[in-house]
Amino acid sequence: MDLTLMAVHAHPDDEVLTTGGILARYADAGFRTVLVTCTNGEAGDGPGGVKPGEDGHDGEAVAEERLAELRASVAHLGIGDVELLGYRDSGMDGWDTNKDARAFWNIPIEESTAKLAALMAHYRPQVVVTYDENGGYGHPDHIQAHRIAIAATEATGIPDKLYYTAIPRTRARAMFEHMRSIGIDLGFEPSPDFGTPDELITATVDVTPYVDRKIKALRAHASQSDNIWLLQLPDEAQQLVLGHEAFVRVRCQIEAPDQEDDLFAGLTEG
Image (cartoon, rainbow, N blue to C red; front, side, top):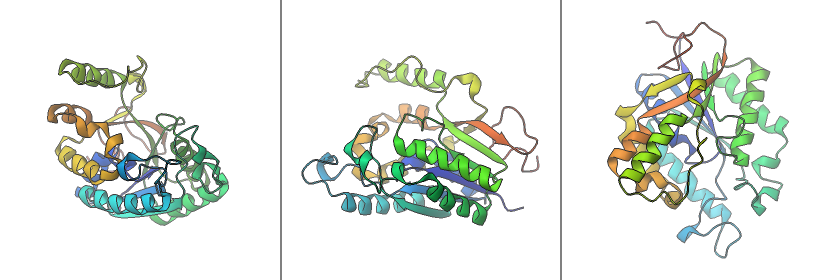
């Protein structure tokens, strides 16, 4: 049986942090890997870090650059297929860009769901990974990506297993404590409830062999480097943050263990 992993993400660069390791790992293992990117990233930083609405920000030029960066990132991770839904980046919650009728957040969910459902029907992934109902941290496009992934799964009966990306709470605390211990100023005070409660985590995948490729993929998104704080960390902190990827399984149509170290557990022999 041909095995396929599909990751549904909102923007160019989202593919790396929480799923870059599994995409590289399963691609190396000979599985088909499919990245769906819902928007073109128009609300990202322009040259010099200029934001949407500020002088010099050209959304179309930003999107062109970010899609080129995405192609470089995909090459580092070895992702086999990339599908762009082509919607406009909605920007962070509360930005004026939220009001653009072309923004992903404002597209009728039936329309965007139909596009994703068609891709699921084409690739027939056994495993799909996307964000939780809050989009990880409340970004409108992440929330919308979650919504259409759920709707497409319900409409098609695909996949066998559906996961949400997660950052385990205890690992998040350890990460922040480690950074403080080596003198890194976080620039903010993390909430005590940052991350997913550990008891909800159902899968933790060791991707330490792929950390260097994840870092290269992150660096490929150079236009957004001011927003990718992981690139400012020393090597040992990057290893701590990037070496494992965690997930919450929310759909399982097959027999599989309650706790997994392989998203394809139950789908492969052994």
